[in-house]
Amino acid sequence: AFCTGRPRLPRKKEIRVTDPELASMEEITDGVNNMNLAGESQKKNRIQVSNTKKPLFFYVNLAKRYMQQYSDVELSALGMAIATVVTVAEILKNNGFAVEKKIMTSTVDIKDDSRGRPVQKAKIEITLVKSENFDELMAAASEEKEASEAQVQS
Image 1 (tube, rainbow, N blue to C red):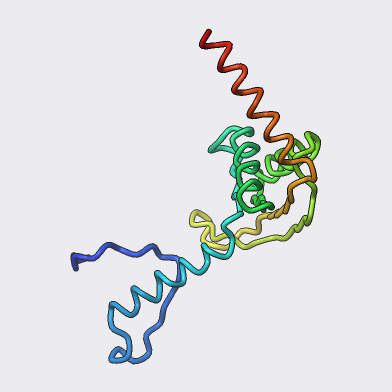
Image 2 (image 1 turned 90 degrees about the horizontal axis):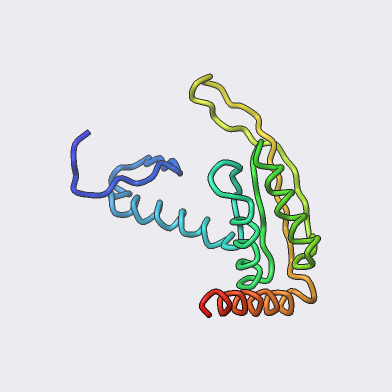
């Protein structure tokens, strides 16, 4: 590989140029950047959960923040992380923060480099919306936090 002075683009989308005179390198770069931005702007309220990277309550608290910002949140996971997503959703529901809006399950083909063939993985997407008393519960929780911090300082 030779250096062109440009940063390498992530290999998310494949672009085929049929007539090299029609597409300059800048146009291709702009096209890839626009595609990535368009995909990201569609689902700003999606949390992709992993069962290895973060502790459970990281996702619970992140989901609460997303619901404050967007009024709903989409929790999504593949394979072994599905149990984590279901647990996060149940904690939010049982504590009165959220109500289930939609649950969708599917299978997706993931390319496994070690086997050289696609592997099917289970996928779940759970959409939660703020409960009627979400704002009251969040206000009460922040008051408790402030009170406990005041005790620690005194």
